[in-house]
Image 1 (cartoon, helix red, strand yellow):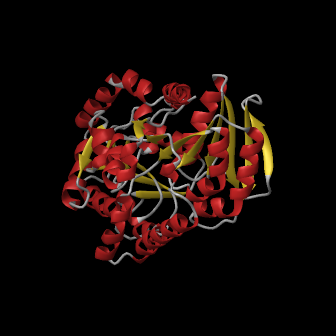
Image 2: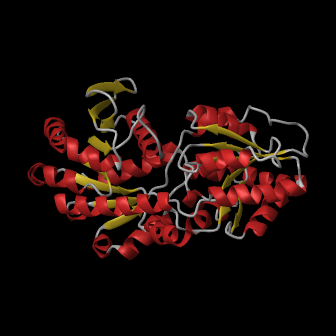
Image 3: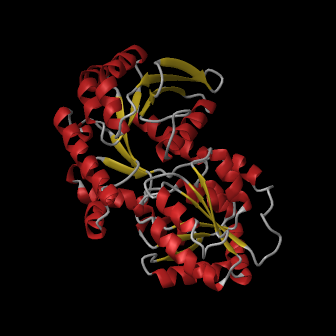
Length: 400
């Protein structure tokens, strides 16, 4: 059985959850003897590489550094992708949702060779609610982003063919993602829809737990935030709530990892005279460095309004760290249902600040940590790359 996974990002060219998701899946599939072909975008010249003891063949195709990446990846490489697929003849092609341009180029091969198609939804239409949210807050950056995304989606529809018309099954990375997608897309309901949670190498994360806390003084609490610095990630709400909480408890600290349009805002708040050493900004850092910092920190704060399947929350859980998250469908599924911490309406700054202070309390903190430790086996089983690969292999076998 040969699987071709077509993705806009794959290590070393990776900037988000899609790349991590595919890397962990490919690694485990290769370990289990499945022949895997990866076709991904590249910032450099075209190249072919072998990985995982030559059990996986990666085609990197040069793509202009323009956004949205997947749109331009399809525009510049659809014909080359067709030639690769024709040469490799996989049994199954796995695509991201919104692959209309690729589908138009590949449709004759899919029909005559009998290649099955798996579509993976890494998100849902809900982020487009950000368009109205941005109008309400006069957020020019977010408004430009959502408008551009909507425009490119319409262009892709015009230039390509409906991906769902050629799909055999739709995979969603979370339950709330599947519910929202099927609610908003009538044609999707005619397909088989399943949920496969992202998986990570649990053993790699357990190695990080050997790191000790930053301070042995239980009065100190180090909050960790790691995400793109955009308004929909709850950055401004976090900064304001943290400053309120810190006025009542000077032993609270916030470490911020990531880059984005709100970087200047973060730096401005950091350098205020009434904020002596309370906030530390690291910028965009390697994943391994962030994990080490998360391992020695105390609490992950993820106040994002919209998420699909947040890898950083899963990483925090496997490292035994409590999570404070915005009360939303994604956090109800991942934080509340797994008892990983507290969900709160972060738009209520006083309540958000109170939640930060309450969880920083040693008694409350220990109780939540102990609760997460009791869930360790369940978390490891649910979010392991071993489990993810097993679910995909079961799906592939049913298709072929």
